[in-house]
Amino acid sequence: MIQLMKFYFTGHEQSIPLRRNAGIFLQTFILELMHANEQLGQKHCEQLIEHIAKTAGCFFEETYRDNTHNNGPLDIESYTELILGLKNNIGGKFSLVSANRDCVAVTNSCCPFGEQVTDFPELCRMTSSVFGGIAARNFGYAKVEIRQSIARRHGRCEVCIYTRPERCEKGGRQDGTDAAGGLRQGAKVRNQFGGL
Image 1 (cartoon, rainbow, N blue to C red):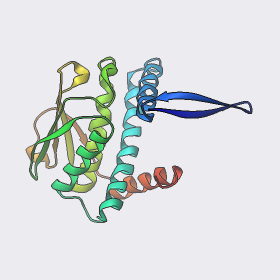
Image 2 (cartoon, rainbow, N blue to C red):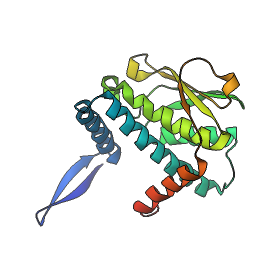
Image 3 (spheres, helix red, strand yellow):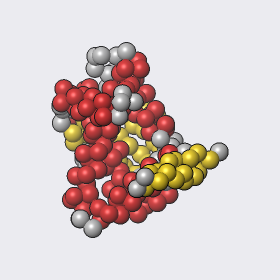
Image 4 (cartoon, rainbow, N blue to C red):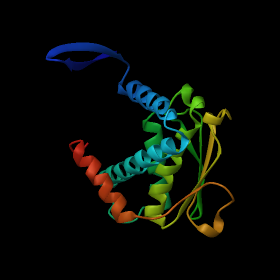
């Protein structure tokens, strides 16, 4: 199936075929953004990814809450359903390894960013920031450890999200909590896109 995207250039309408779906366009857009950010340096790139991921995480969490009519903190089961659904709906193949009140472990066999992700292992920060931000808002603490990743040529991803500091292993990224601010940011994004 070929969809058409319409672009307007100085008053002239032109239709350009877009193969499959908008996911390919977004995947290409993000990878090209990464290429552009290489020019600005690693720190700038990581900050940009983290900002995008935290904002997107708030949006996805709020959308999940609206769909499930859940206004309270997510429990481990709901959190797991949210992160797996989120990643699998954008082209990942994430599955649950284990989940308890201390740690959620997931694995993945297909990166949503495609095969070119091996050129940009920094994109793993997107996963750690989204998973960590949502966990921190709901459990008061989060530390995400990406033990293996497709981006680092391991052939799969192994991700552990710790929800209690005393249960963490060394390594990983720690996220603080900002539940109210985070959800407000998600609402702001949602309003910009007409309540997606």
